[in-house]
Length: 350
Image (cartoon, rainbow, N blue to C red; front, side, top):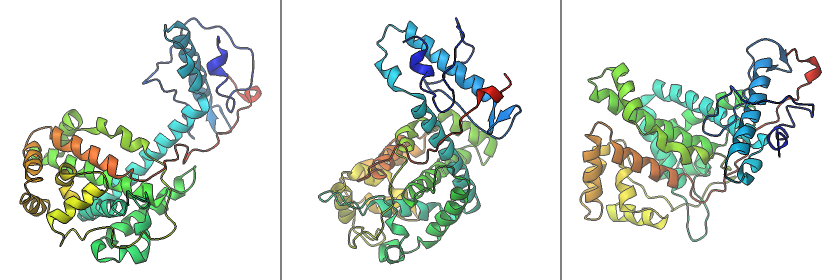
């Protein structure tokens, strides 16, 4: 094993060369992930890669090898975590962070689109048909024949915002265009986060600084891991069949329950996703509360929203959105990754 197992996992960055021995490393390991970040800043660059980045990547690989050699646990897992995979993860993570910033700015500039963005993501997902495993969050709602259906009335402005964000995102993407299916669900995530933050600010008397601190301290950002990982959906090439999505404005609570149950959710998820069903959450919840199967959950989440942390409400909403946003999807976990430039060490001044 020695240094071979980890250092051999960076073939695109390092040619095979004699390696010095290290008894210790000053490169910290965070959550078991090697960070090899490439940017345009800094000095002593070769093919756009800074000397510091190369040393960091080199040191991180050695540090992981030391951990592997000193661990009492067998190392098949560590051997399998090759650098190409770790670099892909970092690329996807960085790209997703940039997307979220683009969406954050767009939503901040258009707060009136928060509710339509939530319904847009819901209705794109609700075309899922469990028996045939077709439909779901596949971006089909972008087609004019689908967005113009009665159940999607009032969602065109939200779709336009998504389309404008896509133009910006595709411009800076290094790994190909973002799919509508991914972007619509990420826009819903950003909209949900904005409602969580807005609630924290209200609880601090409108003080944004204190509200941000409250949300940072008690918010549920750590619950988004699985949602973020499901990044790499494929777009449908035609509209999904009609008749699969209720018109939430006119549907009975029983019809809503039946649809949620049909896709593998239930009364609990119906209650926690009340904000997705229309612009007036309280009015929607009043309607849902008339059903004996839903009322207990409506009351539970209303109580939770009155607490400082809103833990029950936020965690259950994130869980429901995560499940909904993955219905019928085969995620490509390599999507948006790209080849990194090779480094000629003969030209690198170390």
